[in-house]
Amino acid sequence: MSPSDQPVDAAHGSVPESDDALPPRKVPRIVILGGGTVGVYSARRLRKRLGKREAAIVVVDPRPYMTYAPFLPEAAAGSIDPRNAVAPHRRALKGIDVLYGKVSSIRHGDRRVEITPEEGDPYEISYDHLIVGLGSVARTLPIPGLAEEGIGFKNIEEAIAVRNHVLNRIDVASSIWDADLRRKMLTFVFVGGGFAGIEALAEVEDMARASAKYYDSLDVSELRFVLVEGSARILPEVSAELGGYTLDELRKRNIEIHLSTFLTSCVGGHVVLSSGVEFDAETLVWTAGVMANPVLKKSDLPLDKLGRVICLPTLQVATAEGEVIPDAWAAGDCAAVPDLFNPGQTCPPNAQHALREGNHLGDNLARILRSDAPTEYKHRNVGAVASLGMYKGVAQMFGRIKVRGFLAWVLHRTYHVFAMPTLNRKVRIMADWTSSLIFRREVVALGSLHDPRAEFRAASVRIPLPPAESLG
Ligand SMILES: Cc1cc2nc3c(=O)[nH]c(=O)nc-3n(C[C@H](O)[C@H](O)[C@H](O)COP(=O)(O)OP(=O)(O)OC[C@H]3O[C@@H](n4cnc5c(N)ncnc54)[C@H](O)[C@@H]3O)c2cc1C
Image (cartoon, rainbow, N blue to C red):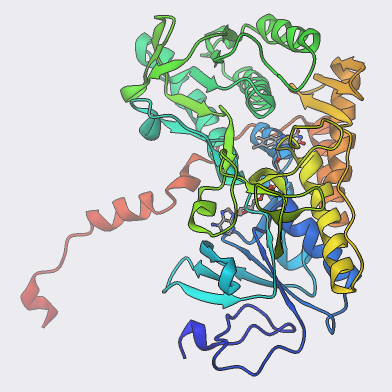
C-alpha cells in the first residue's frame, strides 16, 4: 500500500489518505500546517471546543514537538534543560492526529497539501479547513562565508549546538598556547540586536563567563563577545531609554558593540565589518531577523509583499481586496494579521501574539462550524520582557512601565513559564530553575553529541582486515 492509499484515522492517526479509495468523510477534517505556537494552541482550542464527532484535526510538522522559542536563550545558557523548552506533540495534542513531514506545497483550490516525509516519497492529503501556522525562518543575506561559518538561533537544535560549541571552544582553548588560535577560539560574534539576538548573546556570555571561572589556565578577560547590529540602536521593541540601558549593561560586561555596522564577510572565520574592523572568530551566531516561511510561495494562498499570508482580523485568509478565501485560516509569524490597536499595521511576529491568535483562531473556526459568526482578533501589546543572564533583565509593560535588573528578570521568567504549554513543562522548568539556583547552572559541554560515531569509526578503521583467503 503506498502512503497515499492509507487513511487518516481520527482515533489512530498518522497515516495519509487517498480520497479516491475512501468513502466520503463523516466529519470535516481540519489540517493544521505547523505544530509550533499557532499550531499547538489552535489545535488544543479546537479539540476543546469540538468533539471527535464534530471534526478530525491533523497537525503536520517535521518535528515531534513545539519549541517555545522565548526559552531558547535560557536553554543555551543551561538554566533550563533544553528538553523542557519544547512541548512534545504526543503529550500536548491528545485526541489530535500528527503527521511528521514537511509541507512542500499547498493547493487550497483543490483542498490538498503535499507532505514530504523525512524518508520516502511525498504524498498528498485532503482537507475541509486549513490552518496555516508555518512560522518564519532566519532572514539571511548573501554574505561570503556566512552559510559555511554561521549558525542560526531559531530552534532547539541550534540552541544546543551553540551552547556545546561555546563551552567546547573554552575547554579546548584552555589547553592551547598559540595566542592567535586561542584568541580566535575565544571570540564569539552575534549578528542582530533584536530581542532574540540580545537575549541569546547576553545569556550565552553570562554562561561562558560562569564557566571560564573553573579554568586555572584561562582568564575571563580573554573571552571576547561581539555584537554587530545594522541600525543605530538595539531592542527596537522597547523604548530608546531601555535599549540604551541594555547597551550600557552589555558594555559593562565588556561586550563589544558595533552599531550601524554590517557583517560584510566571514570566510574561513575571518570576520570583516562594514566599519573596516577585521578579526578572527570561530563562532558566528546569526539572529538578524526572520521572514515568513518560504514554502508559502509554493501555495495558491494570497501573500503580501513580505511573503506572509494575507488575513482579516478574524484570521480568515483573504485577498488583498479583503475578500474571504473560504476554509483557509492563518496566524503567527507567517501571517499578516491586521493590528486593530495600530491601524494600518500588522501584528508583530512574536509569541505573545502567536499564542493568542492560535486560541482565537480555534474559537473562530469552531464558531463557523457551528454556523456562528467569527469575531475579530484584538490584542494590545502587553509589553516586552528580556532576560540578560542570571538575575538580569529589562522589561517594558503597557508602553509606560519600565523595569530593569532583578525585577525584570523575575517578570521574564514568570510571564514565560505561564505561557509555556502543559503543566508538565511548567513544573519541570521551575524545577530546573530551582536546581540551578541551588547548585549553579550546568556548564559541561557535550560536544561529541554532534558526532557520536566518531570514536567508533576511528576504532573500526584501526582493525586490520583478515587476509581474503582466511575468510574461506
Ligand atoms: C530566540 C528567540 C527568542 C524569542 N523570544 C521571544 C520573546 O521573548 N517573546 C515573544 O513574544 N516572542 C519571542 N520570540 C518569537 C516567537 O517565538 C515567535 O514569534 C513564535 O514562536 C511564532 O509562532 P508561530 O506559530 O508563528 O511559529 P513557530 O512557533 O516557529 O512554529 C512554526 C512551526 O512550523 C513548523 N514548520 C516549518 N516548516 C514547515 C513545513 N514545511 N511543514 C510543516 N511544518 C513546518 C516548524 O517546525 C514549527 O513547529 C522569540 C523567537 C526566537 C527565535
